[in-house]
Length: 241
Image 1 (spheres, one colour):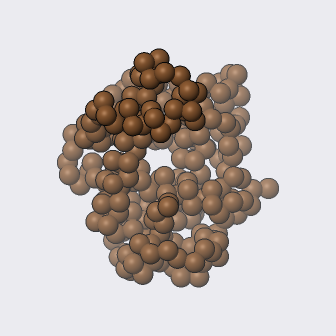
Image 2: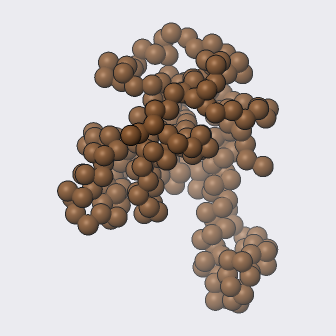
């Protein structure tokens, strides 16, 4: 069952922009100093969450949602996806909260983690692959309210999150032959099309490793969520006309 990150206990489903309570009682009231890092230019934007001292705005959620999908070469989403579907908004916010937890952890622990320039360059290259030309990409970004500075920030934070996963999560995961065989037996027909283990051994290793890294990260994330003051604010999702 998917974890409800808004509270430790299941809460009644409601449209996030219609919630009347300003904060989650689980995480307590919002200290004023949490708002200090907000730049003046963001004050016109809606604050949707505060993770530790990191303020997340509706624009942040939209930028991360759109650019994450483009970077993964899935499709060309729009901010309208978030504004029209509360479930999409909640998933996008959950993803951004996870990234904020990583950034907070790196800063709070003094972890020497800096994404190599080549990773940032690769992320930017990934963003361009779904477009026929640079003007085509710029037009798409402009229609979704995404500025060049948003792209630079996304590329840097996306690359740093990848670096964190590689250096501090993947290293905790191990595989053995018995686990791989059990995974193959369970997924033989659905994932591996009935092929023999010997023919798909590398694929088995890759997919199982990916799943174990994901679970390890979820354990880390859940621990950090319990340690971190997280405040979720009411959201008014404007419909993009």
